[in-house]
Structures are given as structure tokens and as C-alpha cells.
Length: 416
Ligand SMILES: Cc1cc2nc3c(=O)[nH]c(=O)nc-3n(C[C@H](O)[C@H](O)[C@H](O)COP(=O)(O)OP(=O)(O)OC[C@H]3O[C@@H](n4cnc5c(N)ncnc54)[C@H](O)[C@@H]3O)c2cc1C
Image (cartoon, rainbow, N blue to C red):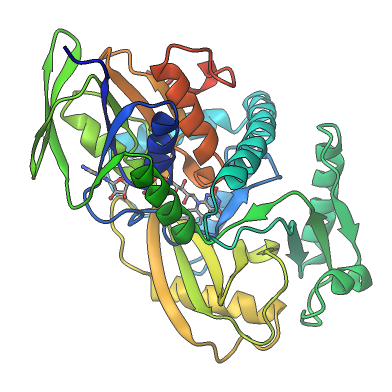
């Protein structure tokens, strides 16, 4: 007789690997199935902010107005590829409904609680495993060239104070004390001290090694292509490399989750949201801490021997092609804030798909359609930040324990 439940995790990004880690930690038998290599999706080339302090969700009042303005500018950080797509239309309507004060306030308090627990999990992980991923807690500096935007930023700080978030407002002189390598165009900045950053690819590969050392099985180049179901349960996971039988199945396929779940007849409310990153060899004038170039929506993250610029959110379906015009405008934005960034040695030009939900909150919990299916997906712009807590929650759901946070806001079917 079997004495251990077999658990299949679908997807080898930061979420799937974190889930596998916490399942092994609680001594579950785990096999992770990944269609490509470990960390070949959104988790590879992102901005590496592992613990984000600003809790304002993407879906917030005023965002729709900004987005409409950006859509008419080909150099802007946001675009929607025009097409007839009912899922996209539904998603946009749901997103619009989440851009109200009440849902935003709810998301803020959820994100704050997740950060508190997530930071404790980071401490626990780093105390027990030495993952070589350049983890640093240096905070993040938000830079402005536009005085009116800076003023708006300062007002948002007033708003955040009620949640106990203390951000330093830095004038033209003070911002240069924090980060001396700035062009004359920068008029001021806001400094958050609690951000933690990593080199994301190294983190995920390091944690995947831990999973293997703990006895978990990672199967790469193994694509889930279908399922067999019986009595409201998944009885078989079908892949291009044979069939797998599992007591529990965890869906952690990021932006591809809707495609994987289609065979189960489940509609997953995720839109792929393409972003780009440009990774260069660390220049002599490399900033000392992670930056946000606020007027242009570009993230700048020093990562060991390299420096990464991340930008853009395009709702263009599963198209991973790179828009050169957008890359050029990202480079121009960088030059406008930072000196010495003209002749950089390119390491990688990358695009990736964020798994975006209409309300910025992830989809975590048991599926209502199948008793042995757990969703762990839809981490939007915060998948690095919420990876460890998601792994912990899933291990608690499997163990029938009360999760570390109330997971009712993450109910996968909340948009049905
Ligand atoms: C430009 C950019 C910057 C970002 N910056 C940050 C940041 O600073 N901080 C932060 O917290 N978040 C950030 N994010 C968001 C973050 O990258 C994502 O939320 C996170 O990587 C999602 O992780 P995931 O494991 O769900 O998805 P992924 O990393 O995409 O992993 C999903 C995996 O599933 C696999 N898969 C898909 N289909 C199948 C199948 N049929 N069978 C088997 N395997 C399959 C894929 O190959 C993939 O490896 C950023 C994203 C982008 C694009």
C-alpha cells in the first residue's frame, strides 16, 4: 500500500519551484513537470525585486485614464494589440471594475500582510540554505525628471503613511547623496528602504537544486498536453514524455495556465502581459541600488556583474517578439536619468509574459471543478515577491492546515 501522496507540479518558474520546495520540506513526494528548462518563462529576465514595499496594485483608480493616454503613443510603456478576443475583453472589463478605491485598499492590506510573512520566509530560507543569487536589501529609489510627477509621487507617500509605510522624500540635492550618478535632469526621488532584490534566474535555479537535493524530481522538456479525469478528479497527467499519475496536481504554469487548463474545461482569468528586459555588463557608472525611472516606467536593477533595465506591459497574447522601438525608448529613458549608459555591452535582450489577473491578486487555492487540483498562478507583476508565501500556502492546503494568510481573496473562481 502507498504511504505517500504523489504530487505533480506543472511549471518550473519561480512559483512551481517554490511550491515544490515547500512540499518537499513537508516531506511530500513531488515531481515537477516543465515544458522547457527550469526558469525559462517570466521568472528568468524580470527585474528581480524579491520583496516589494510599495503595495499599490496595478489595478488602481486612475490607471485606466493613464493607459488610454499611453495607447496612442507608440513609445509608451503600455499597449494592447488590437484584436477580437472575448477573453481579453472580459479581462479588461474585470480589470476596470478592480480599478476602484475599495478593491485597491483591500489589495494593499493583503500585499502588506504577504510582505510581512514573505520577508520572514526569506529569512528562514537564507538561514537554512546558501543560495548564490546576489540577494541584497538595499531598498529602492524612485527617480523623477518631471516636477509635476514628483509632486504626485510625494502625495502618494502621504497616502501610504496611513499604512505605516515610511518613504523618504529626497529633493534634488538629497537624491544625489543617495545615488550620486544622476544626470542634471533628475529633480527628486523617493526612497523605500525595505525592498530586497536578487538575480532571479540564479535564485530559481538555486532553489531548484535545493528541491533535487531534498529528493524532489524535476522533469524538464516535459510538456503537459492533456489530462484524464474521473469522478471530479484528475486521474492522469498526459505529457509529451509519457503519462503521470498523481494524488494532487498543482497548476503553476504562469501565463500559460489558461492553455494548460483548457483541456480540463476550466477558464483561468489570466492575460499574458509581455515585458522586456535589457541586461548589460555592469558599467563603471552602475547605480548602487535598484531604481525606478518613474516618468518612463523603467526598472533598473544592479545584478552582480550585470545591470538590468526592465520595462513595458503589452497585452499582445502569447506573442514573444521584441518591439525594437520600445527597446530604443527604454534606452533613451535610461540615458535621460543616468550618465555613462551610452556604450554598454549587451548580455541579453529578453521578453517574458507576466501572468496578469484582473485584480492583481494571484489565483491560489483548490479548484472547484476538480477535487485534486490546486491552482498556484496569476502572480501578475509580483511573482518573485509572492513566490515563497505561495509555496508555503500550497503546502498547507495539501496538508489540510490553515494557511498563513486568509486565502479567500485568491479564490481561483472569483471571477466566474
Ligand atoms: C519585465 C518583467 C519584470 C518583472 N519584475 C518583477 C519584479 O521585479 N518582482 C516581482 O515580484 N515580479 C516581477 N515580474 C513578474 C514575475 O516575473 C512573474 O510574476 C513570475 O515570474 C511568474 O512566475 P511563474 O512561475 O508563475 O511563471 P513562469 O516563470 O512564466 O513559469 C511558468 C513555467 O511553466 C512552464 N509551462 C508552461 N506551460 C507548460 C506545460 N504545458 N507543461 C509544462 N510546463 C509548462 C513554462 O515553460 C514556464 O517555465 C516581472 C515580470 C516581467 C515580465
